Length: 304
Image (cartoon, rainbow, N blue to C red; front, side, top):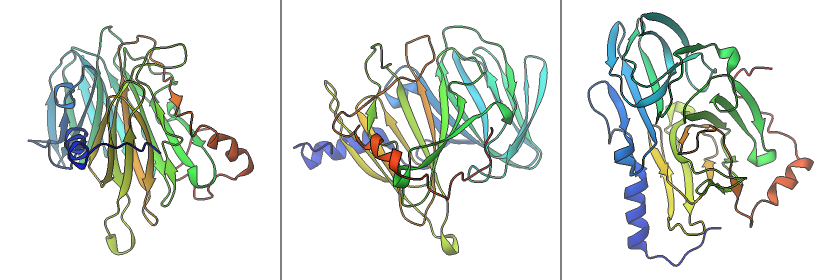
């Protein structure tokens, strides 16, 4: 899968370009501040904010739309003269969450009474949408794949009611030992069945016995016309940016459940997720018909 004759030196170069380790882009209240400029592209961004109990953070308005998506804890969102209460959740491994869509050119103040970690998945915006509170009942949840390819998907800005200019965002939960983002797929050209989408993967790994730190593996390899080669270990707080190429699998090490937040955006204005499988591996989907979904799923409560 994805075999190339590229040198170890070039592979190391790709690792440093596309893999961002936890803390590498931290400053002030931000555990992560990944801008399009740092990613080397135009559209997608991701910030992760850590708020101590009782503390606030003001996020200036700009040309980017984003979600206020709690990873743990809840918060108050003040924007455009509105005050929105977001209940949040204990952790990404225990529940889905309510959230807020923030349009471009909107200053926001985030406050958390009990402390919170909040993701701000974003995209450059070209149209104006309304500020919107989104209850957890609007999260699109489902189980995908079967057998060792079973995973849970939570859609926050992908095929559900929230309107965005260009932003797509979802979460994937993969039980330890399983593969997700599989079969490998791509979205790096605009066709009837595919869209150009820059993608960010942000990882969390559930600790094992005795709070042992877990890990996962991530693969990206060349697609027609695009040269990229990444095969890396990832741990909690790490990020991989995927400008093009076939990506997958994301492999959860046995004993360690894997979470990742996907942030996608591109130039198309239809806000749809269209991708194509690597034709060498798309046949794997047919095998799911004869397999059961992993009984460890769903990992969190889901919507009907």
